[in-house]
Image (tube, rainbow, N blue to C red; front, side, top):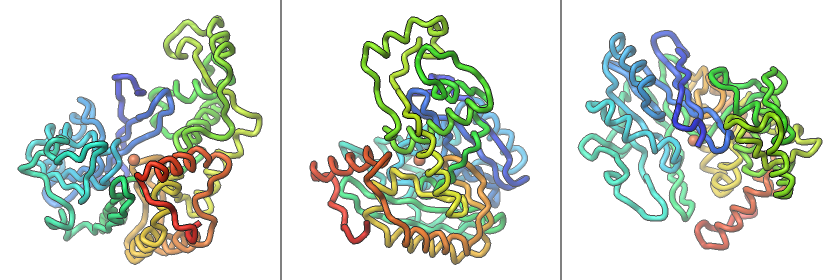
Length: 375
Ligand SMILES: [Fe+2]
């Protein structure tokens, strides 16, 4: 798991004295994408939405904010399924032992359904959003999507609108893809440079063009798992590249690079980014579109239109990729209309791997078949 035991964070103040972003990178084999916790100033203290790993650096920064703004009083896990967000909650709850932990309903684990206390949530101070009330409801609006029954488990996500700043916080349901390399890679551009190469014997060369090239390839890997433009060379070819002059270092994985990109690889990445541009910079993550929302188009559109009723919205802060993204309520309604009209969850090109995962889950009886009227 990148970043291999050392987890630096990028901490930014998004709105002075009100909203902060704490980003880390997570991923496998240098396919590293930013994951974000958002910190909100609330009456009497601070709220953490979608916690990240509470490293010493993060805890020290939060302690500094506590001095100025009051204690971390509320920790929110607003997804039922997103493991990468769930995993940091117990440790963050231990770091801030007086905070109330709020989770959305329908938390689930696989393959065994374990009680939430076994998953590390402190039972004496964990509450369920909506069922047990809502935190800071005088300042924040909470808008839930789901539960959407997928068979394997429920998909639930709860958006949080900070009404005075206009920041709309979401976890996974909406993202903003850009060709601009996320600022967190300034801390370590190695993942970008690793993937910008054509073969394992190539050196890691830090140029602006290579950073963008690497970022676009990471976007494709992270969203499609096995992009159509990538093939895996024969083992002999992969091993043969490992004897180059530049290979004898762990940073380039000793020259092990089992990918071959086709000439036209960039168009798939540009399509992904263009899709966002055509929807005011907002997209659905392909994995959710192809595996979850394909079964629940109506509830998704209804949720977007419900969000569109809040005229206070000025920006979107998602737990992944670019943020903050300027956004108006009327644009959310337009995005819902566009999603309704465009072709939905394809199975061709780079979407093939997601489609085959879907087919496997259907065949194993873990999820239901897709209603073809939604396609
Ligand atoms: Fe996520």
